[in-house]
Length: 161
Image (cartoon, rainbow, N blue to C red; front, top):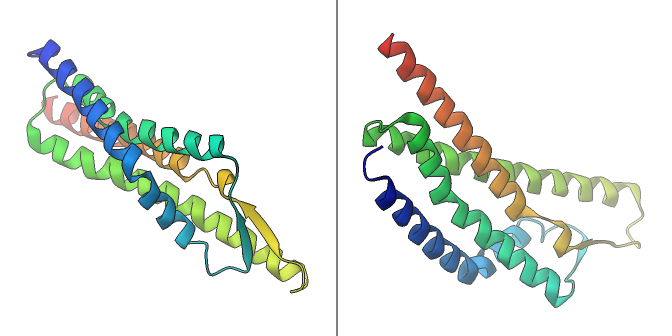
């Protein structure tokens, strides 16, 4: 790997920038996730300030993980052409978004089933601290990065043989 120190420095700076931006854009992310659950007959309850601060740090940590994941791919693929990384980046992001969307969908389905089981005069509630969308986003990023790196690694290895 050429210029290993420069790549690590760029990755660390990128992680700090991504994390800082995510820390400030957490409210938009949170609003988007909550908007996916608003039309249900469910009372949304917000929790203590510490849980909201923890969710903000979790989201910032997940977003700042992206540059490290791409450095990992770069390290595994041994200086592949840049167009290979143009394939890895969207696959990683799509896996993260897909896993988060699946998680929100499963919460929606659970709330719909609860609303059908109980009479309409009982209102179900959901704590916003139990949604954990950022965690599922991060798990999706990790799985997507490993998957795309493995696929690219195996396809380029077959071509070299």
